[in-house]
Amino acid sequence: MTENSKTAEQISFELISHAGNSKSCSMEAMTACDNGDYELTDLKMKEAGDELREAHQIQTDLLRDFARGEKLEVDVLLVHAQDHLTGAILTYDFAKKLISLTRKIQFLEEKMSQIDQNVA
Image (cartoon, rainbow, N blue to C red; front, side, top):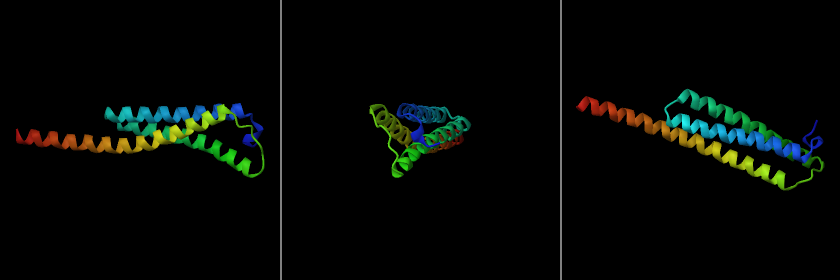
């Protein structure tokens, strides 16, 4: 079954759902990392990546179908869904970087605390 056998509305809502889930998981991962919960951080980033792959697959299927000459009515809802996907991709990429930096900062803060305890 091609993506084109679904309605544009169905495809749009699937994209919005997966992209929204990915973005939410990315945000939850950053919060978990701020709280020092690295296990939850990793879990949420995995979930975010899984959701993002699902959304990206829908987009890839649309492009493949288009390349095969299949037509899909593009409306403002599908454009909105693509915007959600773009936002989710950016959030995921930024989350990876911010989580890396947060872990480094937390590690350095811990080392500084140990040094302070040894000096005192």
